[in-house]
Length: 176
Image (cartoon, rainbow, N blue to C red; front, side, top):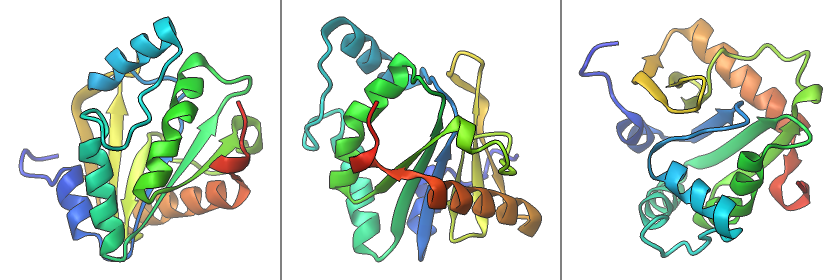
């Protein structure tokens, strides 16, 4: 990937119809989220205020995207019983929903027969895939992302997402 490859914000801004996010890890440890997660583990309290400094940039980005008519969906494949990180993520998903995302959860055992991409990804308009690269500990792994536009790659990622979405449980009905 070249240094000039577009990042997430540019790809989301260019999306015309859909932006879908497939998450498949049971733990992440990236940026400010790692600090927030550690605080949640200590206190049991999660920031779920969409207007907080922590959430405002994301909420504004998603709300403006949805206002343009782009459907934003997120599907998470999770091991059960879930990890502490997934409990933390589940507790904060109410903000994703308030921002305008649709979110579903799929137990990993129900994904065994799905052809999945090797990495978490965003798919924009079923044509552009942004793969997220993480270390084994869930931190960003250089260069952090990779953008692919080959139709075979986009078809795999889109098909995987749609299958996970169809099988997934809406956030409001999924308990941890």
